[in-house]
Image 1 (cartoon, rainbow, N blue to C red):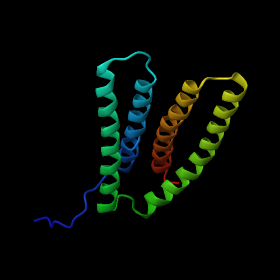
Image 2: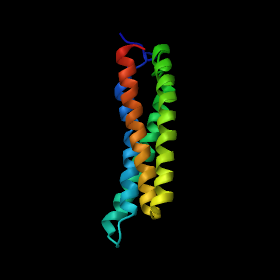
Image 3: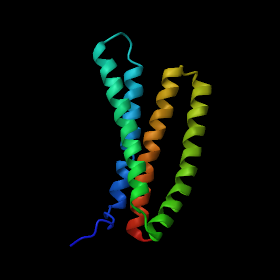
Image 4: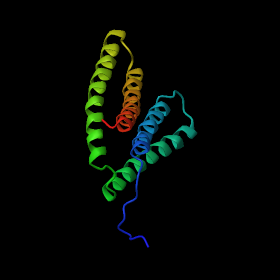
Length: 137
């Protein structure tokens, strides 16, 4: 008989890829916001993607609080991953800033750079964590 206090076991690699879903929904939301012209379907899609991404972030946060997802080894791997991703984020944002300054992009394209950078960083974070976790660093 299982006790109710037993924690669910979560695949850490899949968890980090699942955490990138709200970033992808944010990218879709931004893409829908930049469409020219009025279409009532876009209004509903805006609302659905925004509410779904907020719900996913809230659910992920509450799930992490209720369940101890990362063990000591996973926490150390995540810290290493986050330090590498900080360097990627700095490099990516510097490139985006320079591109916007020198190429004289409009605000919509700059927004795509920012939102796309968030998606890229979440996927890179999950990928680096998977590599580090497989190698046992």
